[in-house]
Length: 163
Image (cartoon, rainbow, N blue to C red; front, side, top):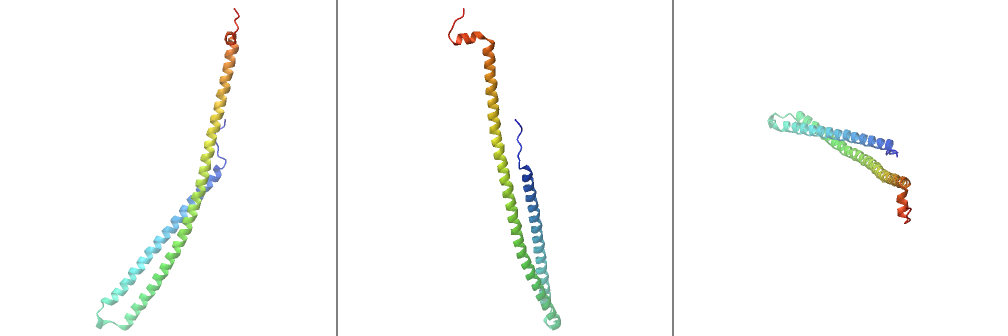
């Protein structure tokens, strides 16, 4: 009997490849999210530094134009921060999308692997039946040869005595 061969092995390889690609795509998106979060933290720290620098200056030495410039820059930083927060929210959606694709790819691969295991199990049962049939046939031939080789055994078994 031939050895086990899964007919859909090529398709299973494709499913594994797609799963790996989905994992890589998800990792890229997560890395982008981390980069966006780091940039947001930088912007917030810079905004706090700008606002803190304006407060530490003594009140009698404050130039109103300079103070206005600081406030406008802080407002601009606030706009950048809110834009970065929006980008982070959008990136979360992209990560969810990639995560869903990965989950789907994993499910498709698992379905094929379960099918392969079931087919391998069926093949094992079929092979055992085939081997038992071969053993039965071999035993039957052995008994036929043994019976043909010794005619006394057949005479004794049917009850007649040839002495």
